[in-house]
Amino acid sequence: MSDELQRELAVVRRQIDSLDGELLALLNRRAKLAQQVGEIKARHGEAAFSYRPEREAQVLQRIQETNPGPLANETVTWFFREVMSACLSLEQPLAIAFLGPLGTFSESAATKHFGHAARLMPQFSIDDVFREVEALHADYAVVPIENSTEGAIGRTLDLLLTTPLKICGEVVLRIHQHLLSNEASLGEIRKVYSHAQSLAQCHEWLNRSLAQAQRIPVGSNAQAAQLAAGESGAAAIAGQAAADRYGLPPLASNIEDEPNNTTRFVVLGRHDAGASGRDKTSLVMSAANQTGALSGLLAPFSDAGVSMTRLESRPARHTLWEYVFFVDLEGHRDDPPVARALAELGRRAPYLKLLGSYPMAAY
Image (cartoon, rainbow, N blue to C red):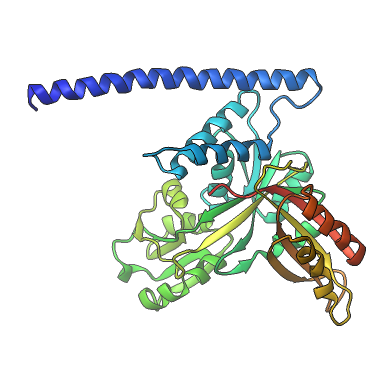
């Protein structure tokens, strides 16, 4: 390396070192201001470091809108979410229940939304995830609600019918499936473990590449990785988090049949979220068993100019051959057009439950 090159690099590196010092000072100033917010709340009888989904969403949206680059919005969103997570945990980390074990896509979704400072609480089933928050053992839950390839997560929808919890956020996670194994080649794979949904998401790839291998559904992709790690001739379909946690190298990457395979998760808490300016409202309703009943229930949305982004039917659990309908709307329940539509819907629907209004996912 020439002397001139060393001198030029030294100048730039001194600038980087100086900026690092400024960044450190600014981060700690921000943390002290967050502590002041907690102290003010405590004086007024509120939880000192309570999580405010709408406030966090507004911060991230502002950061994305003002980001001049060259860092991508995804990168700066991740950075600021981690900063907010660390500030929130100064008093006590949030306890987040999710479908475990560690290494699942649900863990990735929980970390994406709450940052690495949160205390993660993996659960054996989606029922247990709901129960942990309902029983005050966890602050929030993160549960899958729909996949772009395989559709709705039925158990989550069923539990939303009866839970007192509210949807206060959502997470959208791009799903990349990998074939993980200690074997050196595809020819050595005799069985493939994975969750049933992941096996379905990689069905065509498996038909082409591992047609003779036995496909064995298990409770989670992380469990599949655990099994494959200890068994010769075995592989698991799972994400990068499972590969890292269980030390299984990818034998093939991005093997999902649908290149845009995405799972949407919802965040559940014991409180509503305020309006952030870019929100969704979710509800579930029933329709009378008569001609035109459903169209009559949808009319208030179009009359009020409210956009409906999702309509999902589900068998009612209490009556044979009757259905309930899960609906997502653009806007917050307190927005005047949404409020008008909901008021009219309340007069028409035999059953109506608002599941929550919450900020749209920060991608």
